[in-house]
Length: 216
Image 1: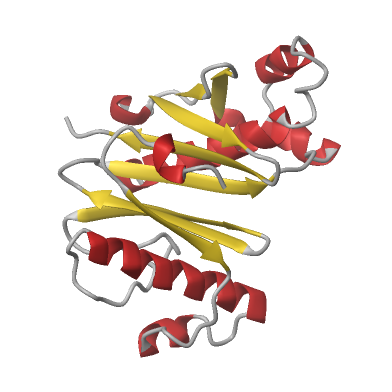
Image 2: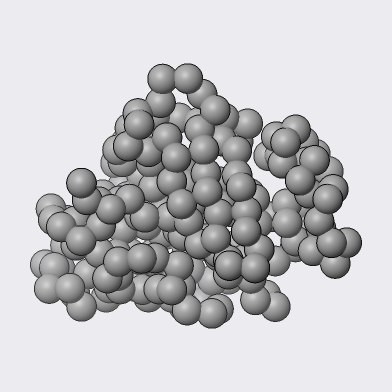
């Protein structure tokens, strides 16, 4: 899809590909997904192969990338990143922690979000905003909101370790500039990540969103 690196304000390395086989996994990575279905193994393998390639471009060591117990990515010391996949596509973005504190990337197949998912994802204010947009844009906006909230969540989680529902986050989207702001509605959320800006891109096949938390 259109350059994923453009979704982030700082220096990042991006690797993306159709799904790859699991031949290049470390033994402990293979063990982590040995019971998974083939598509899940391909998603997992693709993310690890691409992540190692991206990290190598930054000078990081070649290491196993087994997820944490909560299944979140674990990055080598001094690096941060984010992983996303959809249908037959995987993308990884990484950066040095000195340049970017945390990253959130989400890529989705471009599609209309079904009504049940819209009820789950959209706040009342977002629904009202959606109804005020041009009819030609309305079919893609719910999946864009979904993707932006996923990207925001991935960015904030390494900082807070906290869980959020879709209804806990509300977006303000600027279609013309390809930007959005995510604001947490839940009280008491850490100020550093309670309001973060992001960028999005929509191409004929996919929707991509990125959020970055810069160092203090």
